[in-house]
Length: 359
Image 1 (cartoon, rainbow, N blue to C red):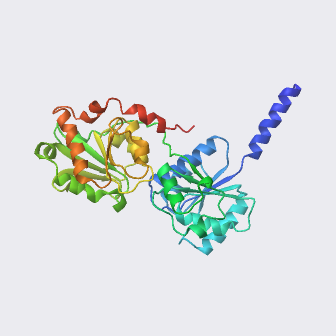
Image 2 (image 1 turned 90 degrees about the vertical axis):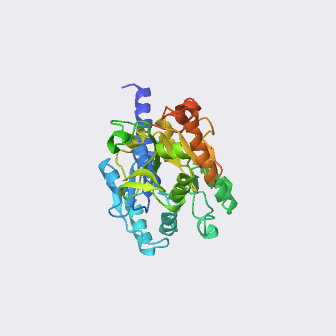
Image 3 (image 1 turned 180 degrees about the vertical axis):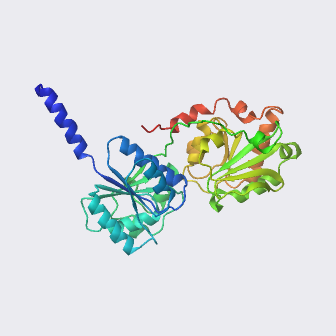
């Protein structure tokens, strides 16, 4: 074996040894965009040769997905934001795992990880922030004890800086999604017995107040006659209630759907009426699938959507503007249910910038 080859093998072995072990900790008990990003990051790092451990509450979907993917996991209760018992347990896990980096993915685990790593200078703490409103307890949580912050959009970083977090400690790292794999697109018209002329509008995500589900009712009430008659709503997220109506607009509440790309591929338009949004990975998914979004221009959404090219942006909270943008799709053509796509050209092209295939 030649000298150069020996040195190359040694260098490769040393690089593997030098890779830090990374402990990801998340307190979410449901499967939302944040938990999906933790899973994608952990599996992506694993595939690059890093040793990763996922720490999350017992019974959480994140634990289930991680174990199914062959990732090591640890179940931690994570009761409250300053849960000393959980902090002690996390400290012990960090020591046992010999973690070089602890990555906290939400506000609760940020606090617990701060407590757990007191005095442990060799273990780095990284915190990701995914929401676009100002953080609390800045002096206590954001000035000291954290080696780096990750903001998922410029909007999130701006909110942090305005609250007093030093800008030079924040890196903007946009969320990525794998290229969508559609096996069997859902044919919502056929499944629900809706007419061929129906326009299928989807709302994807947790059905919570900040996601603006109640705004949909206000938009629906303002739809003019023809638009109102042709519109159908599909809700993808939450518990699911089956057949439903929103201010007289017929719809279907499918709840959480495991094969989300198949479900979204059957939509004509994505409605995203969120009042606040760090970035919006469901919007990235939609654009990648060729489904144009209509959204309020809040948080990181203007960083995703090129208004009039890859979707439509409406001023924050402008219900009249939102229904006007949607109704405009129908005026473009009275026949095609893909009128928004036709009006905007090729919505896929701008979306490719946001798609990251994790290998």
